[in-house]
Image (cartoon, one colour):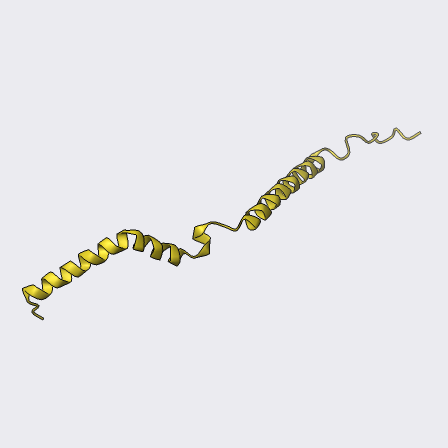
Length: 86
């Protein structure tokens, strides 16, 4: 297919124009629209709830660590040795 110089110039000009448009504020708006609500920032209520859940998870992890330490201790260390029954 043979395109003439006029059509080639028009295609190049259109491509350059589209690149300039999409690199500017219009392109930024289109990108924000495509990202959706998650890209704009979370709702303050959701952020607060996530912070509360993080705090509760940290407390649960501390309790789990404590329970693991108790279970890993020698369970028979505080009992009387055999034959000491009187």
